[in-house]
Length: 118
Length: 109
Image (tube, rainbow over all chains, first blue to last red):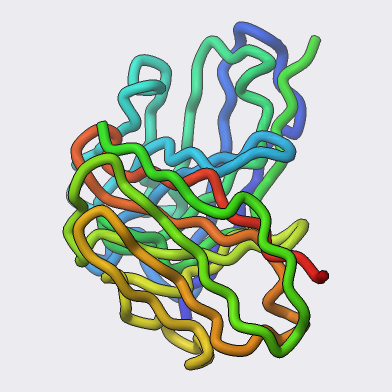
């Protein structure tokens, strides 16, 4: 049973880079069975898919965020990470990591709130 | 870009009643690529339905999905107290590859 756990800074200053990590347990980030996604949810609002990465290194990003997003895998730590650059208050959200196929997410982390504020 | 619209925005029902939630796409979506999620306050979303009508692991059979083309439906046959939550549909397409609808709130009448 794959389980996911996000970790992040909690608070990021405007214009800086947001970094969040997801630790995978009960499975491997090198598994061919999962696409590893990041999804966010601003407070009181709906869900926005950010992007995903496959074990092969291929990625797919939301065009609205593509210029600022990097998703990477660290097989040695069994983790995958999100970096979002040049953040503004509009990037304040709960950030979820998730795993699944390329067309749905079947396992989710509990989420981590990242606030962008000076 | 395919845009998903969910209706109603809020559905107020009593335990034991039937809930019917709608998800409409601006363009045709393959049944394979339509999913439904449930989210309770303070929790991560949970996959309920994939492929428009297949229940995810551990999902009770009171949850069912149907539809094709541009119109999809999530039905909860008899609402249990734990079913009061927000429900999102989600499609896979071209741009962006994954997109969610705005959600339907199912609350207690």
